[in-house]
Amino acid sequence: MAGIVIKDMKKEYPNGFVAIEGMNLDIPDKEFVVLVGPSGCAKSTTLKMIAGLEEISAGEMYIGDRLVNDVAPKDREIAMVFQDPMTSLNPLYTIQDQMEEVMKLHEDMTAELRKNRCIELLEEVGISRPETRLKNYPHQFSGGMRQRVIIAIALASRPKLLIADEPTTALDVTIQSQILNLMKRLVKEHRTALMLITHDLAVVSEMTDKIMVMYCGRIVEKGTRDAIIKRCRHPYTFGLLGSIPKLGSRQRRLLQIRGMVPNIMDLPTGCAFAPRCDYAREQCRRHRPELIEIEKGHAAACFFPVER
Image 1 (spheres, rainbow, N blue to C red):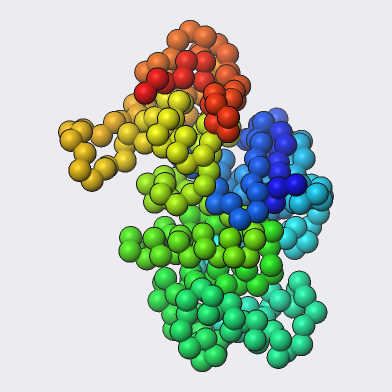
Image 2: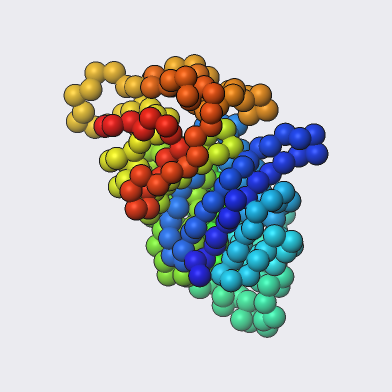
């Protein structure tokens, strides 16, 4: 079975508000999957449910062949990389202390083996002189190096799934590419799956294996990188890609998606994107489309898919 499988995941709060519904994910080992969507579309809620920080209201989640709906976060074999590495690291402890803390929770190892494992992981993420840097504190590293340390700490628990929540937001453009390429290489070497959450498709479009587009708590399109980038069918994905500047393009103006993302707690009847969609018809305003496979491995939730 794949590294992680989610079937019909739903999040409903006691007041009746449904934040996420009908979420289906399949992330095999060594695969790099991106979840992209606007702010407020419940990406972070999805992340918390997968990590075990939010209860799953309905549906099933498997890691390997193990059902993990009610498994505690520390036993889920999931690790996370957050946006700002400075707030993820404790400024009062050395890098070695923080790496070994994770190892003590997950494995029974001697002090010597833990130290050797720390050195090995720092080497893997590209930190020179790891024996010396282990004794350093977070403020003695640059932003890019701190993010490398966070990735090393995440891998220390030998996770089946690595979740990265906008891990390059706080980094400059040249470092962003380095960090993303590093993560892609490491997940293949460690045979883990990588789920990266972002609102900026341009940053990851050239290196991901699959892309899932989220809008107002639901997946509206998913497929391979080529299927989404070259043959997207949902109007929101089309607008999202059209708003990305392209070097050498003769297009004078970038596409603009009119209107605003609706409040997820007060969604319109029918398709949530219909009020902003240039292709919407009466059917879209009355009924909510289901995610339907358009071609093998490529699905979109749209009654009138865009013909590019």
